[in-house]
Image (cartoon, rainbow, N blue to C red):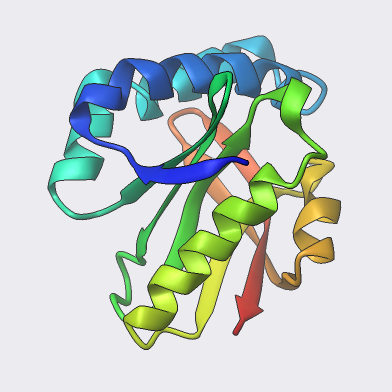
Length: 164
């Protein structure tokens, strides 16, 4: 049975590896290879991950089974409103998608937020990402569209929310 554990700075190389192994199959049909590389280089450097972890901006959790870590999630308060929380990252290795690992990660985030008396969670998903269907199956709904500039690129997203 998979278990969820907190990630620490020592897990940064593992998180980088998981991002490399999930981003290419997830985004290559949606955005250019150049944009994928740019975003991985911007978001998943050791420095960026360490800052996210140590400045309290994002809590990272890992899901592991008997074969090792299979995915991760990161969540934290929104920059513009610390009373609202956002699921910043949720990635499960492609060979393990459909096994319930993503839902287990979301359930753990919800459990932790309920302990903080938080009852809603937002996320951004690219409007062309098949993961939107997964998010809808676990209870998220689209609340609005948002175009986000990342360097010279644009992410054309839905903002989705679940209340619990």
